[in-house]
Length: 242
Image (cartoon, rainbow, N blue to C red; front, top):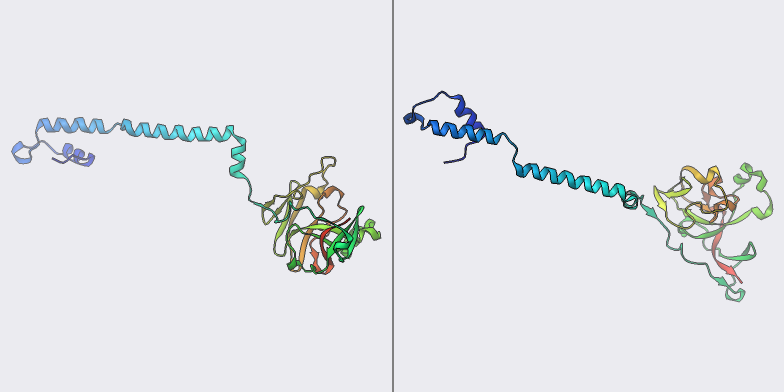
């Protein structure tokens, strides 16, 4: 005999008693239906146990995440971007090793290659020598001295990319710039407003976005005058003359 469903029970109980010879439905069978219907109204202990175990597991995971900030931060950490040369130290080069031109940077001379004068020829992390754009002097007239006209800064944004600063940290196309120059890192200085926040800037074709490695001592860079046109690029710095 097949096991009766809840629908079968309700239908059978709703019918008036009939003779056993007509339906084969005895008082003993009717009592059995009542007993099964009553027991079926209660949840299965196995299902209740599974539900409780699942709830406990979810609570345990949530508690572990709450107690482990580093794990929570790792799960919610933003995607990062870097450059292929950030750990490479530019070499010191003897004068006899190169006939390339040089430009004074501090107490040294930066040797630069003039074949790198287009935005397409550069990559993120390159140091370049360039002429500070004239619009920068119009905005900051205090930097019109000859020694502020040329500068050596690092390329961080390439054509087509969007650059922004959030909480003193650079982001490129929404990805955290994971390099030593990607965030304000001078423990002896307090960040200025333009160190803390910069609205998203789309770098046009034929331009790059440049900054100084140490923001606090960088007189002017793309945070102040925007993307740098390749027409102002003099060359890529490849080392320092001994």
